[in-house]
Image (cartoon, rainbow, N blue to C red; front, side, top):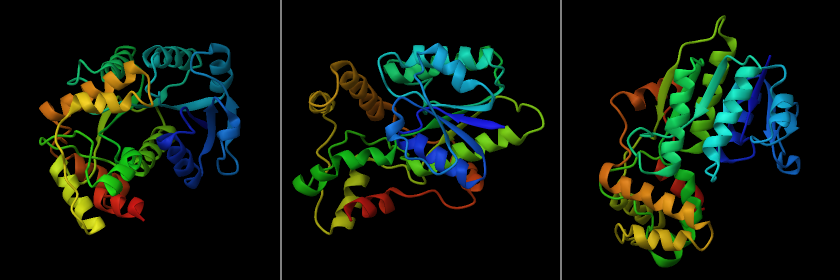
Length: 287
């Protein structure tokens, strides 16, 4: 049978595809632009869009298990609902959905509220799914590496409550393990939620201290300027998305992204190895 991966050319989706192939699964990837596919041999690439119902019906034909990943775009919620409706129509009973940690808590953050709405739809429709709820992707910090190295500051306003950053490679591997568990089960498995977190819950000052060690010179955490963060983001993303990210950062400050008891142990057992650390990630991108 076939596992379909949406969002397959992105940071997480590409890791999911590679991990599934490594485990011998039959993989189909839904992509907007096949020229960006560049997947391992044997992956069936289907061109399509999550709002193009005809392309979805074609992509879902013969699929037994779905990995649903929606990018943070203005119509993300509609994309997810349309995809789930088409999946249900196609008889797909095994689903893994990539949501976000605290989707039910960060209720004023648009992309969190949207993902929580999708979670509720999956649950209320009685779909057999695993909801993966990742915390902040440490890989996002590749975008600010030059600020850290060039200006001596860690500019992400993550605050003092702590954020359990996770590596996208770990997300991809956990997703693949869960997809195969559902795929290989004799009957569709019950609904489940899994928080995806890193091994350490880090504050802004903690991350600056890690960069100080990695680079061998002082890196400062300038503080929690979410308004400045929004203005910086507006230079390279739409204003609605920059505001969305500011609202998320404000919830970092008030609530953090803190794991539940047992989350790290559960993921470590699932992977059969320790989770990747932010220190190792920072050292790798510092080069």
